[in-house]
Figure 1 (cartoon, rainbow, N blue to C red):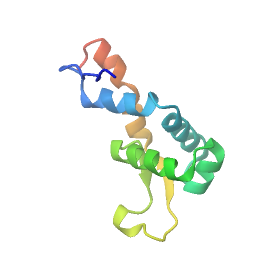
Figure 2: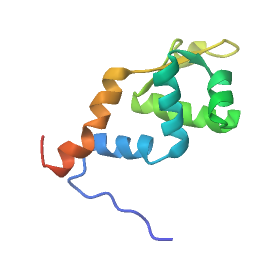
Figure 3: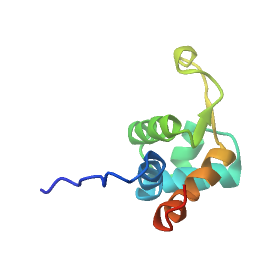
Length: 106
């Protein structure tokens, strides 16, 4: 399988856009959280149909990118209930990435 090569001038923000919106599961998580506000993982899983272990991976990646936020830091989560929400500011910034790249805006 050929390896996809990232163009040298492609900004990290565009890579993040692709990671979120190029993945149906991640996009459905973001959409659910945007519509429903802070939610528990179990509610997100039920609404999106994404299996719990898989959902955990997607939430971690969305959080790493900065589009999703948790109400507890990673080191305090063990055995605790966590609510996830969308960072609207980060989401709006991310959504402008393709336009900025295509039209060579800095």
